[in-house]
Amino acid sequence: MLLLGTALALAACASNDDPDLPTLSAATPGTLQSCTDLATKATSANTTIASSTLVAAGALTVTGVTTPMPEHCLVKGEMNRRTSAVDGKSYAIGFEMRLPTAWNGRYFYQANGGIDGSVVTATGPTSGGAPVSNALQMGFAVLSSDAGHSGPPWWGLDPQARLDYGYQAVGSLTPMAKNLIKVAYGKAPDRSYFGGCSNGGRHAMIAAARYSDQYDGILAGAPGFHLPKAATAQLWKVQQYASIASGTVTTGADAGQPDITTAVTPAEFKLLGERIVAKCDALDGATDGIVTDIKACQGAFNIKTDVATCSGARDGTCLTDAQKTVLGNIFAGAKNSKGESTYSNFYYDPGVAGSNYAAWHYGNSTALDPGAVAFIFTTPPSTQAAFLATTGLKYGLAFNMDTDYPKIFATDAVYKESPWSYMTPPNETDLSALKNRGAKLLVYHGGADPIFSAADTTRWYDALQTANQGSAAAFARYFMVPGMNHCSGGPATDQFDMLTNLVNWVEKAQVPDQVIAKVRGTGANVVNTELPSSWSATRSRPLCAYPTVARYKGSGDLENAANFSCQ
Image 1 (cartoon, rainbow, N blue to C red):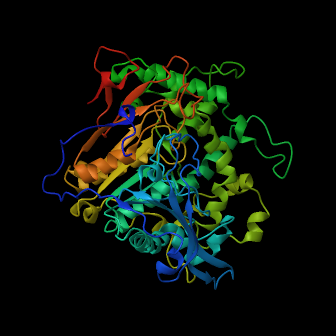
Image 2 (tube, one colour):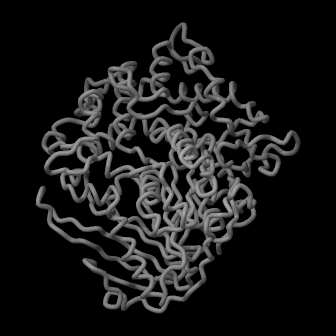
Image 3 (cartoon, rainbow, N blue to C red):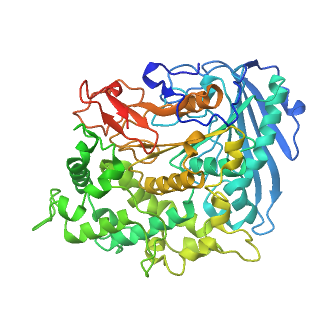
């Protein structure tokens, strides 16, 4: 099945498209012809297929997806096995493919999050929080990979592992996967799609620039396409929070260091979210707890004047002047000692109250980002011994935005391509190759994403429009999701199916002016516990193609997307 029902169906029209662009034909279905013998029949250079087995219908279960997974062939293998001349370790690009017996004629490259490093089950999420279906269930052949490495970030010592993670694993895997599909079904895929969120969204943005000849539709969620800058900004946030921490760590290797979790408490983040709602909720014509006009809110809300200032003890009803200064700095974006921006500002959005928001600012900033910066995003990388001699918190506190930050742009005799070069699209506003062949790009981003800034993605799309004389919407659409944190969660209508919309745009010329999204209230496949109690458990809203915003029509149920329009 391709559509997920009327609640998540495409709301689109054929407006604002470019009639001069090519129109791509629809995929035609096929049937699996080969499985257990693929190890000998499907040969590709430097590729070993370790196993190919038939998986019965319903044997694979996916959280939140109640429709049984179809019968499919599971193929596991690796490419480009080698021994590093730098660290002496063995590397390969591990992968798995799941090939449904009843095939819809399409291929989906599942780009994974974080720093990759493991072969995640190849199901092809359709995007949003807890999707009710996935690409495999829809009939796609799906590939997942580890991007050429595994284990802790010490693999960043190997130059080729860096390049594979950045972009080259996709270049190696794509022709192999298409060949495997051709052998398994007797024909190559008619249409190829690429999608992921977070680092997967970064992979997607790079695919749009580097591999547009191989993919007809690309889906980029919360795209970390400036990941090295965002990761260093996380370390800068650690320093900001440390400056106002009210407590210290009492145990372990960080004993005596500032406890950054005491800088702004959950109650204080909740207060900030409530004050943003109070100031900005009505800007879209409906007082409903959702701030859909995110850009207008940035001018309307002022943290200095719109949040009460503490005159006594902190009790969750106010913020101190120091807290307001630090939070203002964080929303304004990381800077060096000269006041020069090193990443991006962030949007004031009610989703700051989401647990995912604090998790990225307090937890991942000390548990994940230090290792990624030390080994993957700087040249030369740290040594393992030096890094293990400190802690993530201490590394973040010691990171120097003047002398360490420039290392993300550096090269040397061993690391000949800079982290910035291999981690980002080569020219992010030149998508002419994608455009000219009729391929399409859908991008979505939570307004309250705490790690990759939606404001940064908005600036990219504005620049893309400028580079295309205002006609970028003919091949690329951008959707902000009010209230949503990183890829999902927060007080948001965060369940939606971008993949179906993308397929319909590519193959049916149905232009996605809006995408219908739902909350995950009581009775949902996976309940979002952070929804306000005043919202209906089935609330829906249109996500609008930027720069339009969902506005209330003036009458009708506030819980129903039909009573809102994109303007």
